[in-house]
Each structure stands twice: as structure tokens, then as C-alpha cells.
Image (cartoon, rainbow, N blue to C red; front, side, top):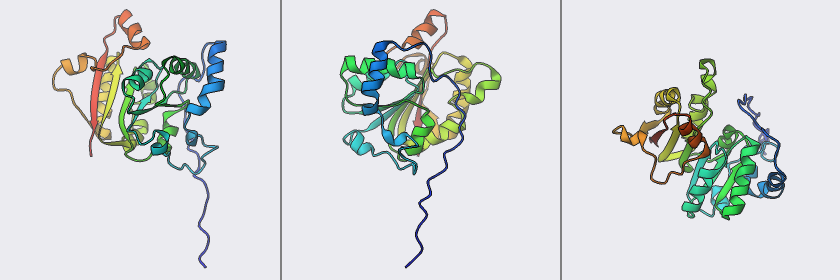
Length: 240
């Protein structure tokens, strides 16, 4: 009889997290949402303690065979819930480490009554570890943290550390949308994203100046407009 195969779990990567996990004190209602709703909406296999072997998420079971979309950093959840309502035949996963944003989303989910959402309250990179290869049909990165200081640009999402695992979980031909009001973030996005296996689909200025047909303006965008900043809407397609 041959020797037994090793069952040693993968070592958890050492990842620096840049940003906030928590802000203002949560309202009693928000604490209720977190206590009562989050566990049922979270794909538990993302957690290292419950899935030390990093087995892939069973998306077919999670969303009953529906195509799956992903929103990275959903903020207060307006866009995520809007897409879930508008696309009941799609399953959508939202990743957000900021617990106040997660609580806001859970309140919106209760109000809207949508059932095609899953929530990962943490770093998207941990989610990428367990998403099956070429399993996501569309991804959104909307008004990400701009990290405006030059020495902090490596913390932005549009770097190889994030883009390469994102590309692996996207299907060939999948659409990746990026919205930002920061010109230098646009610059870095256009430099880095194509190198990770994407093509930019813009053919004329209107293509990045005009919101997508199914767009809903978020509170972050409204703040940018009030402060005189111009939104950019960048659309990429995964090659392959």
C-alpha cells in the first residue's frame, strides 16, 4: 500500500490590509442586521477557520446555477442591491471589509427583499482564493479608495496583487467596470488593467464620460459631483 498523501492545509498568506474595518458607532438596527442576517448571506467557505484547505466555493449551489457577478468594495450597497433587483436571474457577491458599509447593505437587502445576493465582509483577496477559476461573468470596482498620495498608490486595487487574481476568476469575455472621479486613478487603471489580461472597450470620449445604461448614482458619486469632480466610467473585457 502506498504512503498516505499529505493533508496539510495551505499557509495563510501574509496580506497587509489598507483601509478601515469600522467607523462610526453602529445604530441598534444595524447591529441587529449584522447579528441576524449576515451569517446566512455570507459564503462561509471564504473564512480561513472554516475552510483551511481553501476548497473552492460551490457557486452552483450558492446561486442555483445562475451566472455570478462580483462587486469589489460595495460601499453602502446601493449599486449592489440595484443590480440584484434589476437582474433576478443573476447571483451577485459583494465584498466589503468596512463593517459599517456591510450593515448599511444588510438594511437595504431587508427593505428590497432581494434573495440573489451573497456578502463577504472582508478583503476581496481572500474571496479570490476560493472562487473557482473562470467562474465570474461580470465584476464592478466603483469609486474605490483613491489613496491619493503617490507613496500609497501601491495600495490601490488596480495593481497586479489584485488584478491578477481577479483575472483568474473572470470568465473569458467577462466585463470589468471601473468608476472613479480621480484622474490619476484613471491613469493607473488604464496602465495596469490591460496588462492583467483585459482590453479597454472605449472607442470615443463619450464611452468613458457617459454612465452605463443600468447605472445608479451612488452616494460617493453624488459627493464627487458636489465637490466638482468628474466621474469616469471605464469598461474592460477579459481576454482569453
